[in-house]
Image (cartoon, rainbow, N blue to C red):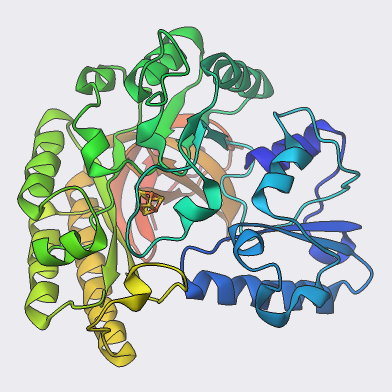
Length: 410
Ligand code: SF4
């Protein structure tokens, strides 16, 4: 559940399951790739078609980047940039706008998991990225506000918080918070001062990870999962991207983390077909990803973003080559995921059960394995020890270790 959803709910607004029943729809868009923009436009058109009478408020990065929404702005009732969005929701519990419902692209985690924003903005200048332009410089939220929010989420019964931001690993770097000088200090504070069952970190850049205190993982409430964007396995490409690490540094970092934190899931992002990427660069990426043994990879074919340095670079890769390389990377991602999940079989993991679909409960382990299980009891929003038995179509099939009359793995 996002801060926006929680803020609206705290104002007494009711979220409806079907957008056709909403009086007001908030569409929170993304602009990280051209594909994300296309999906936002597509969703806007579908929502308008399904609910012609609703007030549709389009916000988020795409709205900030292009208020015309690629020519579809008139389909919306209002287009609200990020700064105005923040004014709408402020800190949780301070919604000022008369908004009566929310529906966005796939809100994650239902009522079990909550996203907690710890910072805004980014001081880097990756050559392919528009986000730093849209979100401005790095700015940390006050630690007291984050602590209050997590304590409130615990009171509401949430089991897991995901600490998010544009550049989460930069938390505290602006020096605005004496005593909570970095992300490690913030996590330490939340572990010490809250009863939250799980804390998960969202994406952390490689150069920030080197500063994280690995002893934090002595507390099993900190999820054994780190998302570390790789982007490319070629030093030449990383240099052109403006990334601040070499492939050797990245690999050493990942191996060190995997050695220090048992059963750690390392997930990543990779861009296929960045300008100037040769076939040999692409093959280097495949080999590095294989060696790193990622639990999951999010693969994006490179897409030009107007106004970025990369869009003007020589050596743009043909779109069909980008797509082919992306599909090879995705094939590898599937194999690596299978390998990681098979390594977990036979272990008993703590699974946070989130929803029931098709007669089976679905949940996530601390190390980001999707698990399903049969169970007659209502285990929603409960963390339960679960034997990981066998791989299924969409993850692992488990056996909940107690309170599950009639459970089977078939
Ligand atoms: S670190 Fe992330 S948000 Fe910052 S410029 Fe690079 S890609 Fe964009």
